[in-house]
Amino acid sequence: MLPFDPNPIIQGSVNSQIVIIGQAPGLSAHLTTLPWNDASGKRLRTWLGMNESNFYNPEKVAIVPMGFCYPGKSKSGDLPPIKRCAEIWQHRLLASISPKITLLIGQYAQQYYLQDKFTVTERIKNWESYLPKYIVLPHPSPRNNIWLKKNPWFEQTVLPEVRLLMQRMN
Image 1 (cartoon, one colour):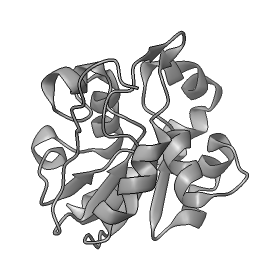
Image 2 (cartoon, helix red, strand yellow):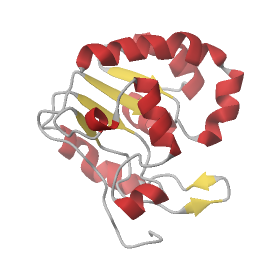
Image 3 (cartoon, one colour):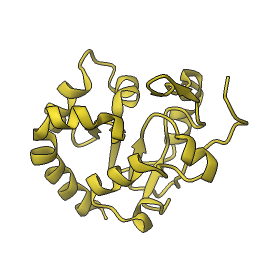
Image 4 (tube, helix red, strand yellow):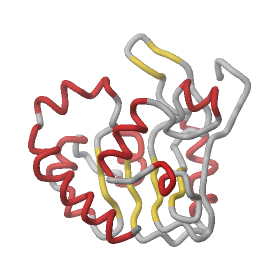
C-alpha cells in the first residue's frame, strides 16, 4: 500500500502538553524521519509561534498523525492518510497522554475526531467552540495559499488568538 518501506513518524511522551494531529508525513519527513520537516511545518511553527526546539521537544509536543507513514503522491498533492492506521493506533497512543490542548490540523484529523458535518472553513470560523479540548486549523500546506487568500480573517483574527493560547502553554 505504501510507495516506500514503512517509516512510522511520531513524537511524544506521557508528559506532552500539546498534541498535534495532522494527516500523514510528507516525503521530506519520510526521508529525514522528522515530522513536519517541510514548508508546511515551517508555516505551522510560525502560526503557533513556536521555535523548532520547543516544537520538536517530545516532553512538550506530541505529534501523532492520522497516518504514520508517507502515503505517496496523487495528482494534486499527497494521498490521504491510510485509514487503517488511525483506526488501530490513534486512541492507543493517545490514551496515556493528558495534554492541555490538541490541535486538529486539516480535514482528516477534524473529521475523525469531531465527526460533524461541517467543512474545515466552518469549523475554523467557529474555532473557539472547540476549546478547551481542541484547536482546529487548516492544513498549513502551500497548496492552501488560495484558501488563505479567500479567508484573510484566519490570519488576521484567529492566528493571533491561537498564538496567545500556545504562549500560555510553553
